[in-house]
Image (tube, rainbow, N blue to C red; front, side, top):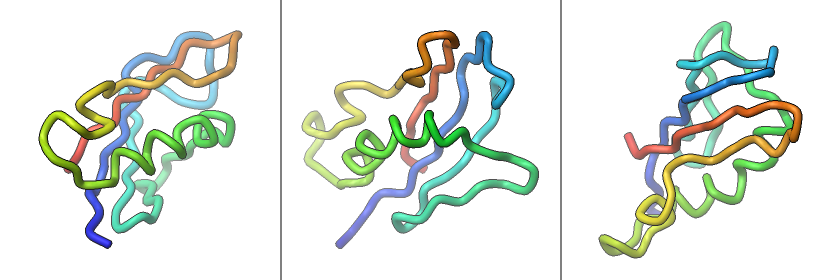
Length: 88
C-alpha cells in the first residue's frame, strides 16, 4: 500500500499542560515518530488515529481527508488543543 507521510503540529494549546504550541510528531510509513524530548497525550492521540489513517491514504485531488479538514481538536472538554495534519 502506498501511504502518505504526515507531520502533525500543535497549533494552539490552551489549558493543557501535556503539550505546547509548535510541538510536532510524524507518521512515516504508518509508524508514529516523535522527535527527542517530545511526547503525545494518549487522549489526543486516540482522537487523531482515524483522521491520521484517512490522511495517509493517497487519493485524487479534492477527494482526500485533508481536502476537507486539516485541523483537529483534542476531545478533552477542559482544554483547547488544536492539531494541524499536513503531508510531508
